[in-house]
Image (tube, rainbow, N blue to C red; front, side):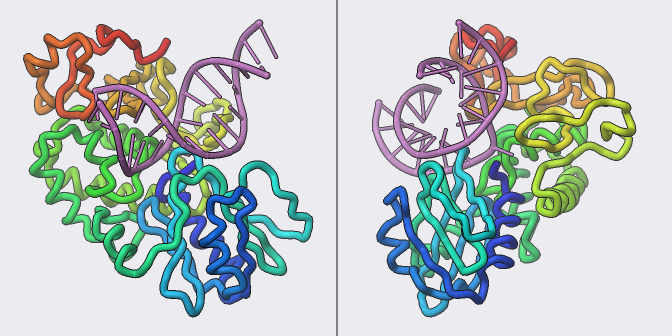
Length: 308
DNA sequence: GCTGTATGCAGAT
DNA sequence: TCTGCCTACAGCG
């Protein structure tokens, strides 16, 4: 579920459902019992996302709830009076009209203002925030020897971009994921940032990730819409070995920095400025370039084929 | 019922 | 660079 657009959408939805209203908090699962007790009965002041972090403030309390959904966490908001506890609910937030359940988050805790400031300071610019300064990200990228694919997912470089947006963004701009950040041109970065801002705003509106251009939408191509848990229409994410919507070439996949990377080898041709195959990476059988710093010329020799 | 996988990240090694 | 965490769900038997 959670890339930056999910958290910003949740902040909006929490505000709409709870802001300005007295709330009741509990922790059926127990792991947020202390925090829930501190905020129980307070009026919710507002929710705010920064990258993949979600902060919830309450009237008369300097501390805020900090939530990070991790890979599998979810926060659902519902209305109505029938409110069964289903599964492991870390935090339940209720008003007279609405209720929200948090499950599976890696972080749900109360933090003070200084602590919040420290977390936010460690994040790169968030394309979904009006106060974002893309030059901060550019400064990191343009002097980095890491792959552009790895850099886009680095939260200290860019806040809120995850595995789907990074793969789709690189595809839309025809960029080799393995190109070193320092070889990205300023004009290319400006285009990437502008595209991210637009794509992620669409993500917030639709509450899903859609990245295909009008001419590649299912209706335009006469194909079935994507039917899986993501819902969104994408070019390469999780489409390994399937034909590229643009050129028909099978989409490729490879593990990079512990995550599955997807790209079209034809639409995103190899850059002469891609991360070189170092002697060490070539010699060591296990070397797979997991940091994004080095890359094996024969990923299938790594002992763990990407899939198939 | 079990296994594998997932839009993430921290901490150990 | 690897493992662990937390939950849900698809795919398998």
